[in-house]
Length: 422
Ligand code: MN
Image (cartoon, rainbow, N blue to C red; front, side):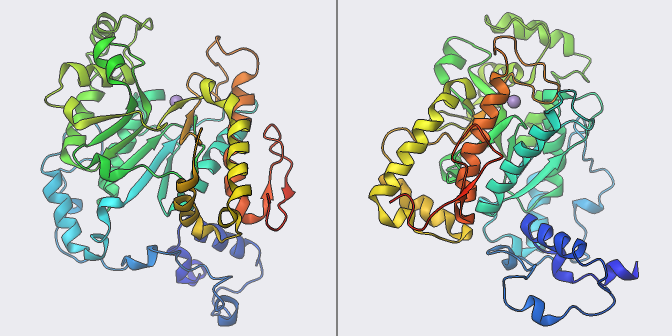
């Protein structure tokens, strides 16, 4: 106890980067006597410091007044299936007691993702899971977002694609300071590290999914929208919506009934059981006034791009971006990783032709159990993930001075020369 109490305080206040640097520092100093104060010189130059990254230090993590909040109400429950009322007021009260978190609250995003608690059956499944998670951590660090990874089922009967609702529910209570949650499936990859969801576009909405109105309302297709990546606002509407949505899940007495209703609603749905995506689209169509009108169907960028349409384009897109850097000197200037957003804004002015897809979603690949959809031949899922992960990692590696010259080979990097690619 004495030891851990004396670990430098700043180690607890950083983001993921800070924590990793701190862990590395602690591990790499096995003989360090923690009862001694750390040598101040070691942490004074801003390079070896575990201090907070830009922006994060404006919030006061030490302030938590004794005033009664929803956390003190024994009737408040974190679990789905236990409706919660007056959430908007309760959340507002908490924010009023924590004024430093009110600044910038509308832009605050927490990324939520996760995977099953047990080891993967696919021999390369856990390796892929790690790299898929690294991709999300990289994206978060670049944009100053936080991330929560769930590796357990918060509701024992809500597994596979039903697992996200209990996670989002619990995260809303755990993070009253956060306005938006971005749920992203483990099989989805950020493939444009520059891009940020245009939150102001969604100011009148509470949920955002990738979808096409004509496929949803016209064809009534269960694949007219994708439920594997979504933005959800931290508000009462979202809690209520998730209760209704989750009623179609395997823990519900109406599970079988919903399977039948979904099949009779969507002509292209063959799978007999109720699934979350069909349920979501069902509510958008059938309960438009209550739910549908607050759900934004996004298709101006790839919030959930289908991998099979995209992986073959990555080499060409890499060349387009490289050509852009050849012709614009300021785009190829070396810079600190924390300045990445600046270059993203500059690059936007010169973008022509194919842009990087924001998110590439490997739907049907099932990297953990390995039972991919039989329409995907051979190793096409894993080969595709390798290419997409390296395509994304090249954007991350650049400020570190390295590049994967071959998108099919994540093990090999070479240094990037000064003024590359002039
Ligand atoms: Mn998925």
